[in-house]
Length: 99
Image 1: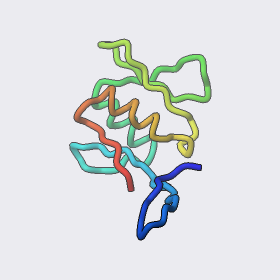
Image 2: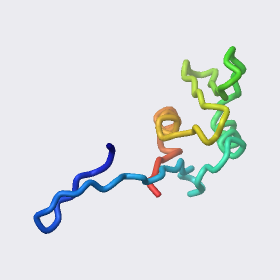
Image 3: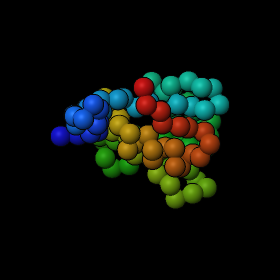
Image 4: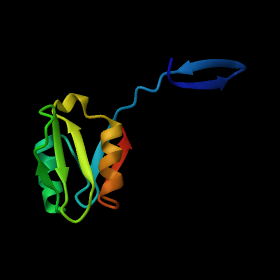
């Protein structure tokens, strides 16, 4: 069971937290809605596609660092863990928001 316990009028109840999270590109204010739009933004920031050994991943790297962003090929499996990985490796460019 996941969610938040809320106390109201002497009664506790569990509210589910089914909020969806989105990755927002801060300079444009746009929600990243596909890998193609994400790849364009990442390329502009100096990231390049990395063709590693795992065919189930999209990977990006920068020559100036050892950082590697690994994303599932299936965009429906793109979750907040992947979003926060992008945010940490690109400070002040992306933000994760609840919708």
